[in-house]
Amino acid sequence: MIVYGEVPGAGGAGGVVRRCNALILLLFATAPASAAPTRAQAAATLQQARKLVDRGLDFLVQGDLPRARDAFAAAQALAPEKANPYCLLARVDSQLENCEAALPESRRCVELTSSGDERRPAAMSIEAECLGQLQLAGGDLEAARKSFATAQAFVPDRSESYRLLALVDARLGRCADAGHESELFLRLAPSQHSRRHEVEQAECQQQAEARAAAEAQAAAAQRMKESPPSPPPLAALAPAAVRPAPLELIPASDRQPAPSPRPLLKRPWFWPTIVGAAAAVVTGITLGAVYGTSTRDPRPSVGQVPGDLR
Image (cartoon, rainbow, N blue to C red; front, top):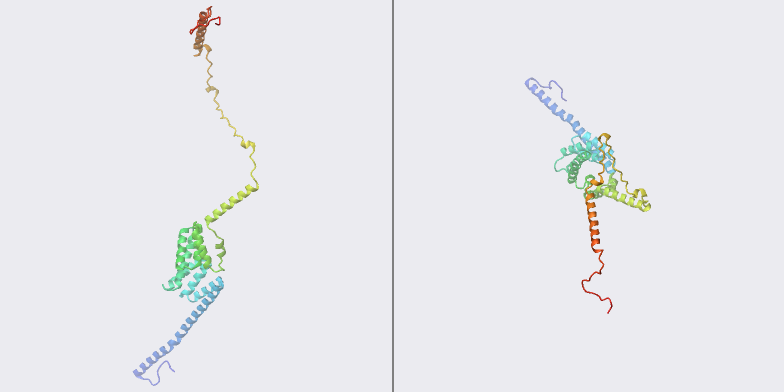
């Protein structure tokens, strides 16, 4: 037993040295005893965090995302410097479409993992995917598609990236790409995925417009077949009446009197006509006087015909 004060049997300078040695031994003896509970407590906390992670993984397998998230969040609170709770939280929040939480969680997971860690590509894929969803909500389809393609490149077998790519390509009118990406999503997504039925029923924008136009034409043809159009009324067949141009009203003060007709004797054709007619009459009278009074037969110019019929 060590007693603070003089060491029994010590005296003078030798007693002082012995008392100092006793204090040093006392410090070394008590130091491990005070540090041991701290290490044990940290180990217990870490073990509790691991149990919470295991419990969250069980909920995740069962498809109970809210309870899985609660377990991972509790584990993260107990071990804030461990990467696994952040990585799992980012995974669950991305499935819950809570990108506001998944984006910082995925970035924290990347910060706490090394370049060769298998959890790192998944976290980077979730980060790019959430960034693309924010761009999609803002209406920037081309930027969103680039982010979704980056997410798919980090984890080629991640179904959610294909679903989002199909969504954007359908809105951009890239029907062939959208159809291929939808097939990949349906192949990779679990049967209980909440968006599976939505993707199965979705169709490209151009295909939807073409189908709607075809259905409208078919309905119009069916209506024509069931009830042919009645002939138009006769009034519709008559030519449209020509409306006279409106008369322009001229004030009486501005009107000019109509010109009076010229007398017959002053018309230019009157006198030439009279002269010509008089000349024709005189010529006829003269010819009649000359040839009309002769009593002998006209003499033939070719020969004479005897009158006794010899």
